[in-house]
Length: 131
Length: 285
View 1 (cartoon, rainbow over the protein chains, first blue to last red):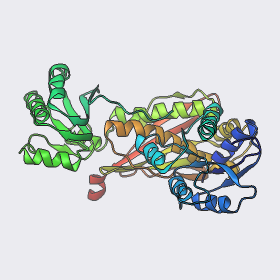
View 2: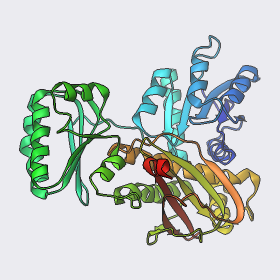
View 3: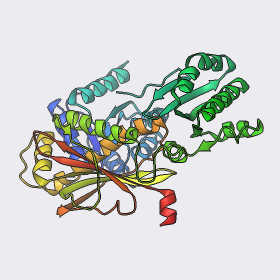
View 4: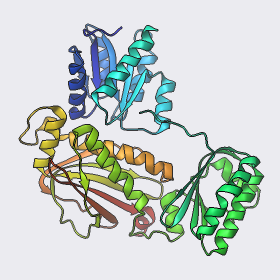
């Protein structure tokens, strides 16, 4: 499912954090990246991206449209409902994890994290989707 | 790291001057007997106040209500008190129906209970409130920046004498108090941290790195909040903001209490401020 050509959308309202994630995934070999500043911006990118987005890595708490709202929107859409979605958040309380899981998140990583943590979550999603 | 749920219905933590008991799930009579044998004697012998976090209780049996009433009686004989916190409505109703609401008194959250028992004043903070921010700061910097920071002596801020060049601020919002947590950096420290995080050399605070201060405060807040809410503080989610300006300072603690934790690191110094204002004080102001 993921090869190094996979287009990855990184969604975070904080530019510094988008840059951190971009740097990590580039070091993993993924070079086809795009960014969005909130859920609305991300949805616009998902709807119009050519080539299509193959993986979304999104923050949870963002103004306007949160990562949870974005996830629900994706899962409710016939065209994009199977799009792999990795939630990245500073919220480590179980209720946030449970809500994301109920909405159909594929992975959940808690900030701060190291490149190996992010890589492991991306691999887990890949393995789950290929199983 | 993913959140892990505990299966044990009883957990007990001994603090400086009180016991924090956390009860969870369906509290059947059998587990009340375990509590009376294992936890009750230590709490009574200590002569401490007792705070019971009820947030995860789904059902409480009569046996448990009797056990808690017995605890309250013993604690009262030691001239101390017992408070229930974060009590779900269904459990509150059970207590009311059993005629125990005068014995098993409730407070909104941990801060409210500590104030009610006289264990903190409106101008003091329990050490259990500060430590999670301290450990979260050290951990976030270790993982994100690969920097080993060291906390200095904590002090109470009396006037806005501390200044910095960039701050990440995040609101502390709960039913019984409001406030904020601020991490403030001199430009030199912040630029050094962001250079390490991004693997690029910065010499000044550029717009593209400024929101890193908000993200760092967000991560510290997120880690501290889980520990504080486990204790029973009930702090809500908030979004961070950034203050940028040479030698700026805050006056957010003018009516409340501001604790400052200075930190040293090989990349430079910085400090964390924890400011809280009890809602009762807001109403009185």
